[in-house]
Length: 154
Length: 64
Image (tube, rainbow over the protein chains, first blue to last red):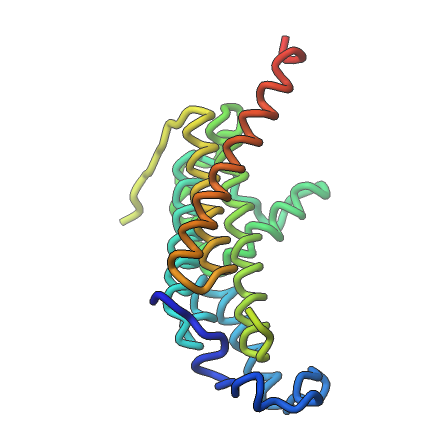
């Protein structure tokens, strides 16, 4: 877990010295590799850390899973607002998109928040930020997994 | 069974928890080696707290 190489599992990468200059061009990647990288990105979005786990990047997978999970758990515990698709204004829609970034954890958050949100107090307001940050962080991690699967340095 | 969970945290505790979790995630994503990650996490956490407290004090004159 100390050192992690990129693209360890799904797309093994040769040493930089073995790569011809043209091999770096994304447009020349095989179609199948692109599809696999996209699937890894989607997997990383649906289950935080899964995109990295599929590439045997265990440290990053565990880090993503635990931090996103902790942010969601704390956000719900602080009675933050878990936005739904019925948000009327732009902020509601943006909040929904951010919350959806946690993938499957969004549905866990909705199931756990039985008492509803309480944004009248500071804890609830902080909880809303925790949930949104968890979503954006997971999207960043999924993008990172996707880039690593494409062979980009990460 | 759905567990009802509830936390009551102060502003500073909330900010520190947020800063710690984000710093850990950034450290794991952006660095490969363990010692580099630890350095990054500590430095990022320190800056999060310094800037957060600094902005808090900067807003103090306008808070009332």
